[in-house]
Image (tube, rainbow, N blue to C red; front, side, top):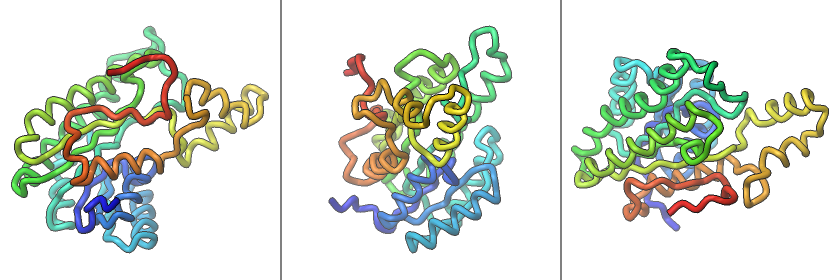
Length: 266
């Protein structure tokens, strides 16, 4: 299927590593020119160079702190200047989750909560607020928010709150921006294999005396496909949502964790 993405222009936050980088790579392979944005300038420079060499597309790295309004305004303006416009925004910048046990009630401070929510929820809102006018002026756009399956399960109080909030943000933006030609969707990855997975597995294996294979089996015990989903497989879904082919999906959440056992969502 031709996703009709060749020549589109995208800005991906959290694009230097993990799921964000996998999304950037897949979009570039589909013919999209990119700005990838993150906090670490060195990681951005390396990622942009490697992605450009692999895909042959224009890939520019720009530093951003999505918790800061001035930084967000600057990165969107910089992306528009670098690419000549903006068609696609992928929000993937967030505090990492799933690598350590989430804090219990007594351990949740105001600062811990608001720092997390400011980066992910308000950060996504800030990015959309700056990007949407450029898309509306062209009469077409896609905004894809990367959230997570903590929106549908307990275990991490802050994780659930922030991810439910991203889903609510998505639907509100879709209702407002849909008439302007902009579709807004949210994807909920579960535990996903990225470049950090091997070290996480090794640390847990060392702490428990179990084999790495047993640790991975336990990590994926509630996944119906029997393994962790790879970040590249999340990127395939996001690439479709970023394309004109996805016009029938707006405001909705797409779970992409390999199928969680038990619950029915409708």
